[in-house]
Length: 284
Image 1: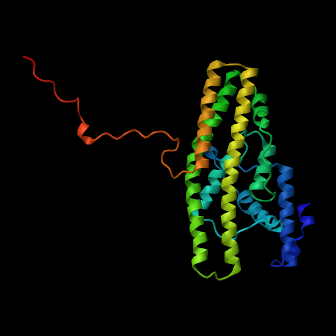
Image 2 (image 1 turned 90 degrees about the horizontal axis):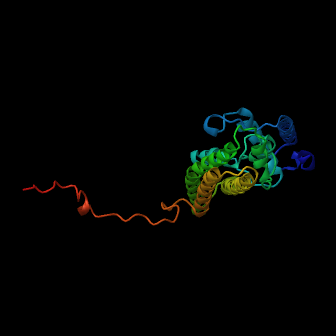
Image 3 (image 1 turned 135 degrees about the vertical axis):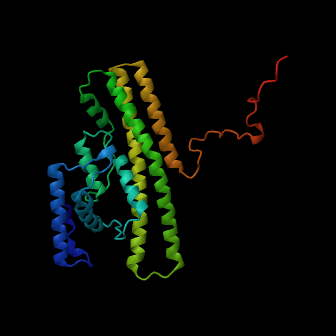
């Protein structure tokens, strides 16, 4: 439907035959993705597994569709930090429940830009899948929420650090545009589009984390009513607060080493070192 409403031959830089071929490719990828519910494959430790379809074919088709929608698209090669930003961000933007293949497919189509980025899904989807699992113990669901929240919290700081490096590089990129003559409008448009893409991805990860906070909060509250457990709800709340602190730190930035606004312990002078460890005086 997207291809029919915005034919590729309308773009001045792409020939009619090339545009038709790209449109057909994009349509084929879209139909295949929707029919097969193709989530991005997951490897060890929740990282994305290499895939020609998800790493090459779908992004290439998505770039053409995004350009047809009027979105900025950069043809520049990714820097190492930009590639790491996308790899680490994927673990945050995907659905919190690995069983949610519908939302997983929608997210993958948005990540590859085959579909435009839309709002977050219903936070209640996480609890729906959590409650449908037939655990032997009802307390296992609390453990699942706590484990998911802590796992997400551990991912925030590494993503935050690479996001800071990418943002700093983008600032230097924009400064370079003003310091020298640009050889072509294509270079100028490519640089500005890459900055837009990087900022979009960072913002998307932040929104996804907020969505996870709401999802986990709703799950904890419902579990507390459905299957009360004083000890387990305490653990789940502690894990949720840990993730919330990491999200706040991400929104504040990562340059400050004191990430939680805590007073740093005062450093004692070296003159006090080893005090109290002297040999006791001899006894008469």
